[in-house]
Amino acid sequence: MRSNILWLLFLAPVFTMGQNSMVKDLEGRVYSKDGDVAATHVLNTTTQRATITDNNGFFSIPVRVNDTLVFSAIQFKKKELVVSQAMLESKLVMVPLEDALEQLDEVVVMPYNLTGDIIKDVTTLETAPVVTASTLGLPNAYVKVPTKPERELYEATTGGGILPLNPILNGISGRTKMLKKRIARNNLLSRTQRVQAFYADSLYRAELRIPENKTDDFFYFCEIDSAFQSVVDTHDLFKIWEYLEKRSLAYRMNNGLE
Image (cartoon, rainbow, N blue to C red; front, side):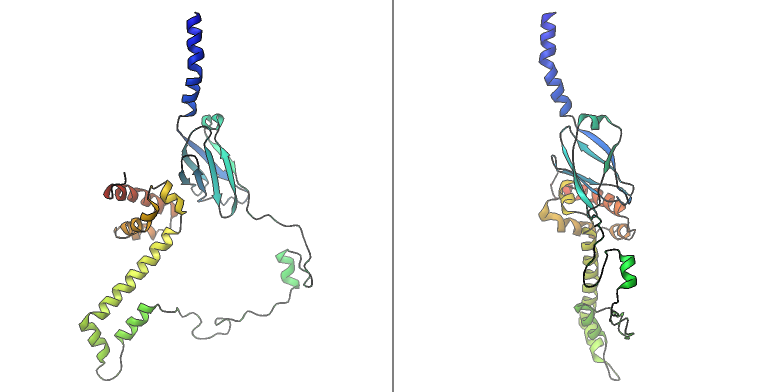
């Protein structure tokens, strides 16, 4: 009997350590007063794993007891949370977020007698009209400024006279075709860069396991895929992220990063 008790005393700390080292997907939801909690970043700073919340603030991330989670978004204060055993055992963890900008008490700014309340101040403050090309009604107010390749293409495809030589010569030499390809390439690159900026750089490293020096190459790998543009055209950040997750698997295998 005494030997059994000694074995139990010996195994108890080992069992406890085993429990603490168990990895489990923590299910949770972030919320705030205004309810705008979509795409909040959730980073496990202990394991460098990360995810983002869906439109309703729900998230799931692998954790262990004593891991530290950091919740961040532009509109909220950064929040840190240490994972406890009770959190692991709960079905859903609710995480409140605070607005990053706090409302100030009413003040009076001299000499304009501003209160800080926009609704009140707009009725009393005299401001000069904004002068822009559109307010002046100028004919070129909404004209888009062409890029250098677009200007070069216009010059290459226009000309005067009975028989304009410029478009003919540029067509024969292939310069017009080259300029059109350059414009299409620049538009595609600009679009891809906007997609890349949708998410934090740390997510590509922590969640997709793409090395920092390979991020641009990874997005080129996505760009040449025929499905990329149709996914981007949905403007759905979650569908785009799901696509990037699937594409990252193929990229890592092709480049020996697994």
